[in-house]
Image 1 (cartoon, rainbow, N blue to C red):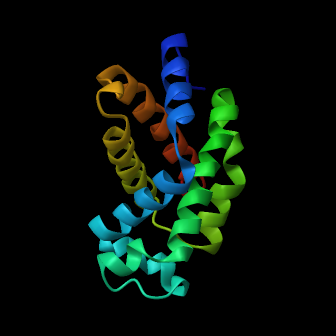
Image 2: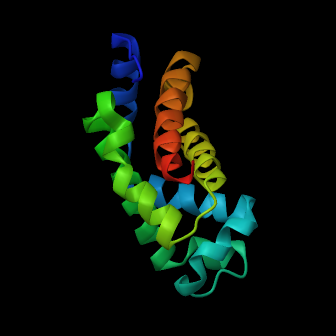
Length: 147
């Protein structure tokens, strides 16, 4: 079980209060697919992903980015049991979708970049550390089924 300080919980909650899910989700997933093009192989049914413009304007990518970001709400609401909160998603991504678990980390990194750009100086190093810890726990929980 992960131990969270009051300062970490406050920082993580602050980030979530500032998120515009409808833009941060799509931008984060799009960034991941553009920066790490090998991750596109899991989105073959999403249509044209041939270049950055196509990815950025793809409504299926945007919708999935929003879904992924809202999926983090589950971790936020269950911070003391993130591992078990993501058991079914871990099984889905491992056994049915066969997603490389390293892709979760890549997407988390892209999410941090997007949030840093949105929050600017409000995204302090301490806040980034707390949010990175949070995402690391989520990534570990999602990759749990792979072990």
